[in-house]
Length: 376
Image (cartoon, rainbow, N blue to C red; front, side, top):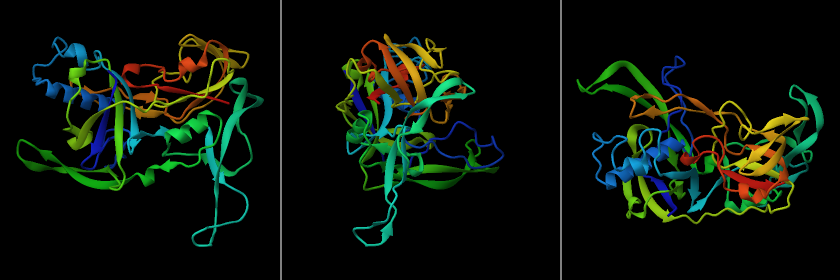
């Protein structure tokens, strides 16, 4: 049965970026913002399942009877994950697609509360423009659908289900939820410890950044968990060490009920695909290896649906690493296509609605590459 695991903050959280502390000759590195990397959540899920099954981790290996269910090291066994994502008051939040830009509306506006003059924000969408010559050949680059002063991509922000479905339907969101309204970043100073001598180490000061969720916000991290038997899901709330420094989180299990609808139906020709979770596409920006360039466009197939990519709006790559507990060494750092990235497509053959909720790229069992389908 598909269930939703919800992680609630009991302390600050810290999720270190891919670089080591001494990589740039400095002592401070930033933190990965919410939600954290998929492997962080997967590790917490597997740990809690193992502990509820009374596993002795010193004896655990790929031949253990539980390894068939939750896997070992990079193998996830029967686990099928979707996420991670944020939950606000129990409702899933969605990344703002990169085709939505925010700018300043022309004219003079006054605040209804203070009567003072203010700047009023407005939105504009990107759409495939006219054919132009560039280093890729003759292509259709994204263009703004209307003029809007200072229009730029919206970063570190989220949409509710209702507003995200408006974007999928080719409309503008009514409002946006920014990270700054959900949590704050706190700078911390620490020092390395010599656990054998029980003293601090010399010249081992470091700085990191912790995430503190605003106390009035019911913000959680969610992950859909499926593929395993019912009895492997914990029955009660539990506590677990979560992220860097083993900070505490409370875990609760719910029936997954955040179903996202798409306005796309069979027969729609102009659609866009947007990423709800980051995707590992290897060394390409295309959804898979079947896509080949033909006459300025890229034609291929996803899950039996033949598509022509007209244009794309992709964000900056996310660098993700981590630590492999089984092998006792760092994982190779990989580049992921970020959430909110968009491919504008023309449907050649097949039902585009079938692509809604599908996953692309590598490690889809880890939750990577979840798609939503909209129309343009």
